[in-house]
Length: 139
Image (cartoon, rainbow, N blue to C red; front, side, top):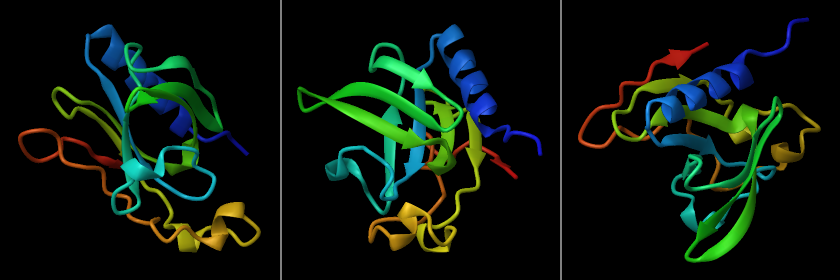
């Protein structure tokens, strides 16, 4: 079985953003495995700036994205499962890529996230500033 392409695509879009001076943002469909500040989760989604100026110790792994970021001046460690990333895009122009993300209640039995997070679900990334998103869904 071939490894999934999603982590490689995330790294490629991240590199494209940073090479061109754009701020890479990810939209994440939050579940119980997602370590991110819940105060910033809206409708089961959190949008995070993962650019070099906004993060410390960023690791774009095959299974998880890990980094530290400041929220209201306090440093927090975040762990984002790659399978929960709904999109990665440049905040300046909305160019990037969207992915299908299984709703929290539709995950595999035995998955720690299957217990459900009442704020979970939804896989549509937010629209780009000033209008409609330029993202396309990849299956």
